[in-house]
Image 1: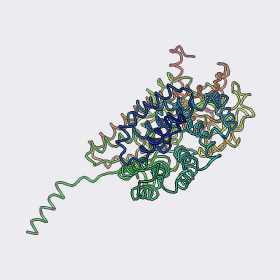
Image 2 (image 1 turned 30 degrees about the vertical axis):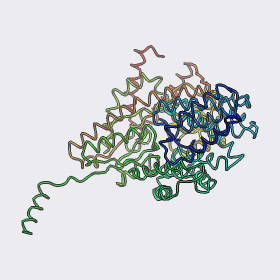
Image 3 (image 1 turned 90 degrees about the horizontal axis):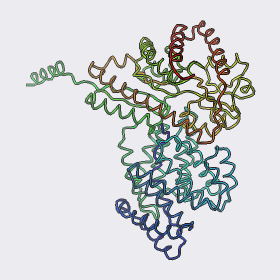
Image 4 (image 1 turned 90 degrees about the vertical axis):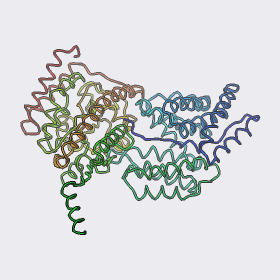
Length: 279
Length: 334
């Protein structure tokens, strides 16, 4: 049994380039912005693979370039989570995203990275020692890991890693609650809304993260409301909240700098969720 | 004209009654999106299509209807028609439903299979007599002791803060007879209890430990099955009796197939989850066979005294133990 549902599309908003290579910096930035502000997801779905190949080749030339590795982790994670439906492709693409994130972060934090497979307590102690300056790498590793776990959720060994990815996201929000315009909060909202209260879950904690994600994005991140409805409102069987959130998404203007593509997809998903005979 | 129309209408009302759709309301603690719920929803779809919309299943997942006891209460007052209930929970309507979950009975899954082949139908029959129809038992797996200090002997357990589910009289008595005071807590408080140190030792199936993230708070797993867990979907006979015969047969067939699939799936999942626990750095400790036999003997003495108090049927326990003995004597397993 995999206890958690889709973490899909969350990575989309993290789709900002981190390319440091001067020659490619502007191109990468412009491409990322063009995709993020696209109103037609199909164009991005078809066009993104070319950019993935471009990034792969740049990383091949500069295998230790942290900026390129982080851009690779972001793009592969976002593409796999938001735009690919085939489960096997999702697995392969998230493998790559996690690998790029690892290669970007681990040279900076070798001691911490060695505890990834250790018991949770050892891992948590090492995480607490990670330098605050690594926030981007920790966030990217955590979100790539969450995407990887989602894609591999049929495997219990993957599900067993979720508390570690969650701890890394908590590490991020403890240092910067608004990180990535509230997207770190959004991940925590989804993860916190998996276990029902009857089994000892604390969905109220998930709810607080969702509220924070909405507040930090000034209500412009429509995906925050969709995931709030899909995970929290459904878990606690709160239909008025569910329908209110989704109707707000449908009524909102999806165009928002850096969020348009994600918002358009949020509206598509909101429509489907409202049509479901769930309650 | 009007009279003719009325007569016609009456004719249709008498001869061709429009079958009223029946919605069976079913509660489960499994959250939506889990493979359990996905398969239940697939079954519901098959039933709705097969009965041309006459029978619908409406689920209340994620424990929104409460724990086993409150679901059973809501079934009794007619607010629900059925629920997925654990073997332990079912003992409230049929005491012997908990027979598989009695402590220190099984040593391996081969013994479980030998028992279930014979006794599943008896448990299903017992539930039916109590007014509930079960569509087959679904394995929950063995519960193992998960702790923060290695447990190889009874002495190792002393000083540990061992959780037992609130209201679990059998395990409470078993631990007390060993000179250990377990800490009863409702399921809702286990994670908090582990976090705050109120408890440091739990019993859980591997899938339960990972799904509820209890595995992050323990370091050792004692490789002795404490109990065999299962759950089943029950729907009241009263609700099913309202369906016409063909619809009822279809509902039964689809749900039986679904439960048989879940039963097999859960076995695989637990095997995988056990490996995942090892992969997370949890140490597996193996008590000696002498110690295991001592625990078994202790449990059986205590169970004998409990069966004489009517907590479950002594004859049924005896039957289960004979089946286990016979499987044990023909198997290469210890």
